[in-house]
Image (cartoon, rainbow, N blue to C red; front, side, top):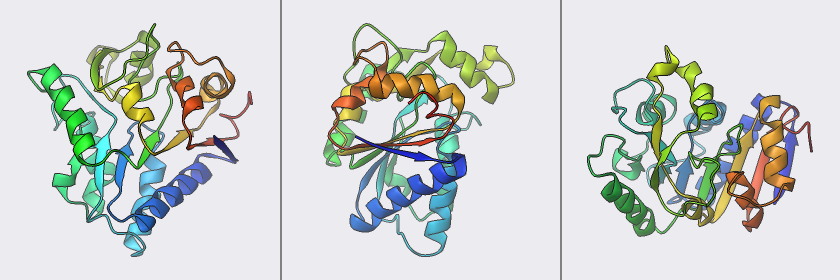
Length: 241
C-alpha cells in the first residue's frame, strides 16, 4: 500500500492522471477500470490534456466502468454513460466498442451482471482500477453490509449515499435508489488499484479504510489486502491519518 498525500484536489488529479498515462504508455492495450462522480473529473480533464499533447493513445485501450444507476436511461444527464461521454470518451480517440458500462436499463439484471463479469474476464482482467470512496467507505456502489458481495450485482443504495448524490439531481426524489456495481472480488482482482480522495468529508472513511478493521461495514477496508494499491489523498482527506 502506498499513500501519496498531496496539497489539494488539483494536485491529486494531476498525479492520478500521470499514473494512468504511465500505464497507457507502458501497456498501450491496457484494460482500465474507471470511476465516476465528482472526484475523478479533474483526473479526466488532465488526461485529455496529456492526450491532446500527443503523449498517449487510447486506440487500443479497453475500459470497464465500476457502476451505473438502475433504471436510468443512457441519455439521462446523470447516467454514468452520459458522464463518461461528457468528461472523457468524447475527447479522446477511444474505440466506442472498447468502452463498457453496465446497462442500467437491462430487463434481466442477473444476466447483465453475469455478462459484464464475462466481458472483464475475456478482456484479460483489469490492469488498473481507479476508485473513489464514499463517506461511508463504499467503493463502486458496494455499500456497508454484513458480507462482501463478490461479483457484479444490483445493490440497494444507503440513505447516506442517496443524500450525497442528491446534489447532482433537481430533487432527492429523482435520485435512483438502486445501482449495478462491480463486486468487491471483481475490484480486488484488478492488478493495480488507484484510490482518490479529496476533502475533509472523506477523512473518516480514509482513516477507517487504511487503519481500521477489515470489515464489510467499511467496504474499502478490503483494499488493505491488495498487493498493489496506491492512495492519492489531499491534505483535508488525510486529516485523521
